[in-house]
Figure 1: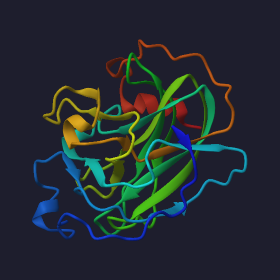
Figure 2: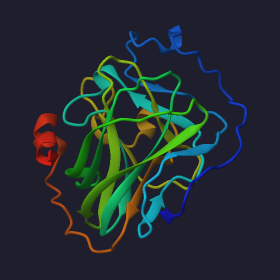
Figure 3: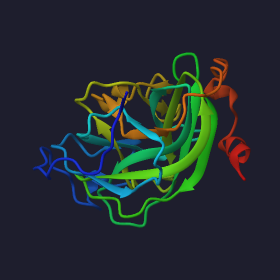
Figure 4: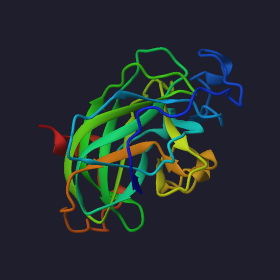
Length: 254
């Protein structure tokens, strides 16, 4: 976990893998594959598309500043309450005031939305939902291997361990965009929530390496302003006990 700021990194380099053009068979949303990735490539620049206006927050990011792959769940890989979500873990206690999401795409807009979460601590993985913002839209997502950085306001006090990340709303099956993944950094706490209908086991919160291959950190950063947080959330908050996505969402509607 290290504070720093990313505005732009590295010049564009040649991609080491062949990426099928949008609309070709390799990216056909009718294929039964529920997980997709852009494939390992030489990192492109990170472009700050949408920044958070704050002079007092500290930015923390577990990635090493470059991203060599991008991941996506679709079809039966996404389900209530947040199957198909990705997450990255951080240490508090703290007052979270914003999140950063790193994205890339193979497709032209429009893009479907994502729901952004902050989770507390479960037994050894993301636990109870502490905050969420539903229906977050992304504009001008760069084409792989370029990466876009998007900052969003979210306010919540967190305990000694917490997790941040989104669940994409890809109901139609297309991977509109991909979550950037750092595969060769020092690594920290990457997670994904595996759906029982996905065909992958074990289900629930898992290290994404089990499904996608090498992962050091997922492309999520966090802004914090204070060290005063909350007590550790209850470890009894397992995903099976949370209920439906609608039940979670209504807790955070204004």
